[in-house]
Amino acid sequence: MMRLTRFSYRTPHTLGDAVRILSNEGPGAQVIAGGTDLIPNMKRRQQTPTTLVSLRHIERLRRMTNGDGLVLGATATLTDIVNTPVIRERYTALHQAAAQVATVHLRNAGTIGGNLCLDTRCTYYDQSYEWRKAIDFCMKKDGKTCWVATASKRCVAVSSTDTAPALIALGAKVRLACAGGDREIPLADFYHNDGMEYMTRGPGEVLTDVVLPPLQGWTSTYWKLRRRGSFDFPVLGVAAAIKRAADGTVVDARVVIGAAASLPVVTRAAELLSGKKLTDEVISEAAKSMASRAKPVDNTDLDVYWRKHVASTFIGYALKDLRGDDMSEARLRTARQIL
Image 1 (cartoon, one colour):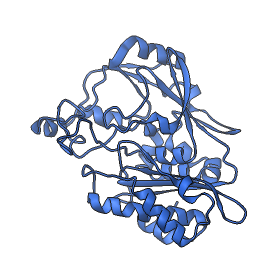
Image 2 (tube, helix red, strand yellow; image 1 turned 180 degrees about the horizontal axis):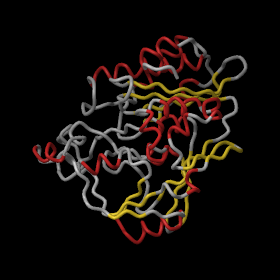
Image 3 (cartoon, rainbow, N blue to C red; image 1 turned 90 degrees about the vertical axis):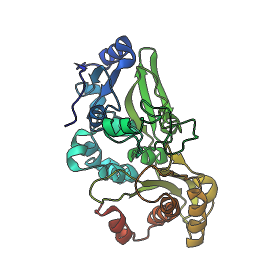
């Protein structure tokens, strides 16, 4: 049986109190919302905070406001996201991504902020403490060597968040609060391509909101590859959003690849698609070019070479979906659920 280490548990009721606690407690303090990722990590001794600061009692962080765009509080649950009609209709990629995270039970507890801050994953890291100790640990926790790429000076653990690629494709920003003040940044700038230091979030900062623009005239979609259809992390995720003129010509586009690096990979979609119509030839050429940005390594499920090859296929699925093709058969085959 894996047991938790001893820790203090704090339950502030205001954001200001949470920030003050984090500032006073120092690097040993960590925020917790749903805990669906953090608690298993603590049991495996991958993360060992001495103080947990719960965000679940802060009403301000649970809000979802719909005005000029949409603002999602960081502790809105993934079930809240899935069940919100405006998200299903206007921000389809986010709805589809949230609907494919884990199981209903975990989506009821897991939050949008927690999924954005999801720890990076790796075959050598996501093991019990005893297993990791037997190989002298790894660079990401307690060791010095990256067992995936032994000559590497940085960790190559993979970003496995479903909602981040979708939100980046939708042009989302995030708000962060700390003792020194608040800031707002594009979500794409929230991540580093480093399996250990994978977020730009500073010490004591709290992710408070996800801010989505209005996106009139845009359509979006999210496609996920995983071994088990009912419940699994992505081994590939593709989020795509496009804006087209009345004649079908692409005005702007964003395609983001997930689970292929230590951060969501932003492609040159606008450069490759703008001014063109989504013909089969355009989709095929653009998908191959964008998939070249995906450089998966052999540290998650399924064969690494096949994962790289299938990236262009999934980008093609996403673009055909946005073109208006009936992709229900391919969707059911890959997602194994009706979205």
